[in-house]
Length: 370
Image (cartoon, rainbow, N blue to C red; front, side, top):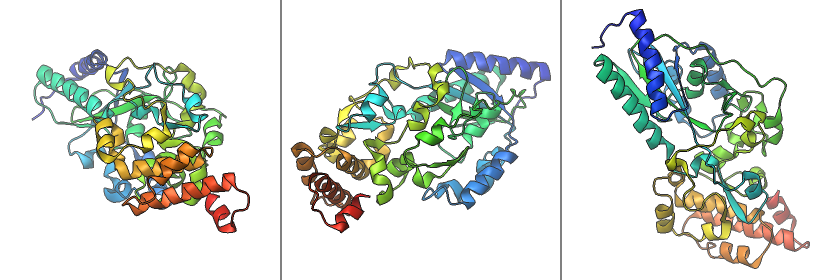
């Protein structure tokens, strides 16, 4: 049972929580109320439009995602945190994107799986609170349950939700992770973040597949992050060329955002580049067998897509690369792969490369390349 605290005690505790959070390595800590009615309306509208695609889990829990007290009974406040992740020594993103021989992976996935890093620290913060005030009700979340984390972070004053649907901070841009602790303590809340996107539409213009269909509205079915990570089946033909060399996620909307000139590079050892994945050759990555894939992605968020989808994504990227004997040879090694999904994307890639090389191709092949 939670110990009753006076308003002055709660105010002091809130300030102390923020100090402890900074000591644990978080860049910012805020406290949000749980009134998410406006965000709930937007969520339901987004789901009704089918913009969640095959992510059935987005609708599976009903309104628990937007009603914290229904997800965790007794919740009255949410402690929200952010943690910078952009590694200082990673290859320049634009250089990688402009080199079709290399594979581009979303910068958040270059280091250790953030779920473990944030969860451990949030748990330590909650335990420190319990040691100071006694037992209280809480639950830690890091992208692990139906939680509207960006809405809660905005209400906790950590920033505002930009037109690309990512959280933005005036002093830090958007290259950071979010985490939450649901608590049954009536802590004083912080002032909600206010929008500062103005008339800027750089993210909408930069999206390779026009997935940002309107400001603050993203159709996940068109998003390259969804297509390369969440989607289990074939990547639709209409988006394969736009995928370019992006083999895990997409950062284009963040790369062009003016607020990211204020990005603060991470000092976290766990988020430093692993296995040289910031600028690896596609042919080399495509050569990994499943054992090698599992070894190289141990402790990484990349492992969640599995070897089959890893090959699927790289096959498309190789099909988008300039024709070369090395690229063709790499693809041919997977022509008889046991997975129909892999074989289909390999065949597409080989046919597309032939189209680039030979002009006397059939109309069928032309249509496959478009």
